[in-house]
Length: 503
Ligand SMILES: Cc1cc2nc3c(=O)[nH]c(=O)nc-3n(C[C@H](O)[C@H](O)[C@H](O)COP(=O)(O)OP(=O)(O)OC[C@H]3O[C@@H](n4cnc5c(N)ncnc54)[C@H](O)[C@@H]3O)c2cc1C
Ligand SMILES: *[C@@H]1O[C@H](CO)[C@@H](O)[C@H](O)[C@H]1NC(C)=O
Image (cartoon, rainbow, N blue to C red; front, side, top):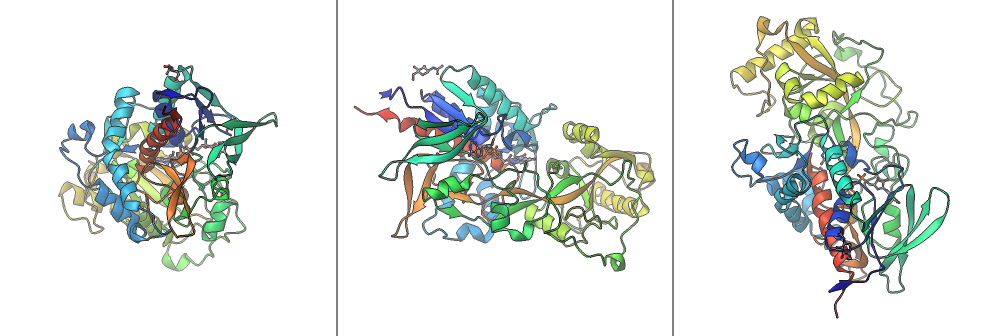
């Protein structure tokens, strides 16, 4: 068994999907050329802040969760009716979810054991039946921790080459239709051609606000995004016939931080009276999209609550992202027309602030979160806190159906007035694109044939947010880093093995 020495595995995109593919291709003994058009590696992956899902991990067991058999069912439930849609015909969504969930423990172990990433803290995010989203206990957010661990390890491998500011602009295709390499442009304007099997890991299109996002979801124009503004690369795959799936399934994250207008804004809010809400919503076309910091879902998972402009809870904060986002978007929009957004209060009691300390530290530093004594809050907010604290302390039934209260420990009534809570203002933001290119359990990119079947395009694999079909209508928090690791590794292994010449 030997590999054709000259040809490398070509990986497009240095987010977690691309890095995972590169890592496994190297393990298979291949040379790897990783190309990214950005000046620095890491893509959106480096920004991930809540963590990565794993079911059945030893970190869950340490938290007294001995087994976790519900990850597949949770994922299917969150995907909604899209899960049973046979579009494009022949797509096998079940096998993708099966691979994702059944490889999740292994993915977490890989990162924890082989790459020494701390993933010992496990939180319960919306839509999950049990805590299964893993992150570290220190200050480094999980995306940055994982990306830097992989990069540091691979940089020491002489078979690995990372080239930044290298934009792939075309896939090279043989007469047979098989992909044989890429052409790319470097920052000096030079064009280059490179031959080898290709792993395409170029990320989603939640940052392509004037391009693919506007094309598939014109109704979302003018909303802020958590993604950096950048054009999508899906077109390179469509050009070679790749099928697209679920392109109009776009995830709105319920909580992006809005910088309160004017420094030192107090949460001694003037409640918005229903009859005052006569302001017109901002015109989607007249406002520009801006990038906002995400208020990590873990903030709610650890115990945070959401309050409307009139200081009331209005939704089970641990429901799935689509449900929480819709509930917020049913409230009156912000009167600030500079951008199309809402203003909802995210409030963490001292127990939740403490449990989310590594996040909170950063947000406090950025001025996105403030620490405020309960007694200094608006009376409507204090009343909501007392009501909720009563439910928690009495293990009562939450009228909104919240079942897990995280680390909330604030008591109701006078006993809480001198305590400090963490508060910020949040709005729904465009966050993640569930849709993308159709692919299969071996991470092969698929095209529709005339017979109405999906068949793999030889020579190309894909992984990460560029792919579609796993998450259906709604992705569970923590499942994106997971799909990058699971399918990235499969793609890298398969691409490397395609180089093996069998005598
Ligand atoms: C703020 C934030 C927080 C998040 N938190 C979480 C979380 O806690 N848990 C979770 O599971 N998910 C989270 N997500 C989602 C998750 O981070 C992304 O979906 C995931 O990282 C996508 O990884 P990727 O490797 O597919 O793409 P990316 O990490 O986006 O990488 C794609 C790379 O491809 C490059 N590229 C694109 N086109 C080309 C081209 N033509 N030529 C060369 N290079 C190209 C880009 O420059 C980029 O570097 C979060 C996302 C954001 C924005
Ligand atoms: C680099 O690749 C060669 C050829 O496949 C292989 O023999 C060698 O072990 C690889 N080196 C590392 C550090 O992986």
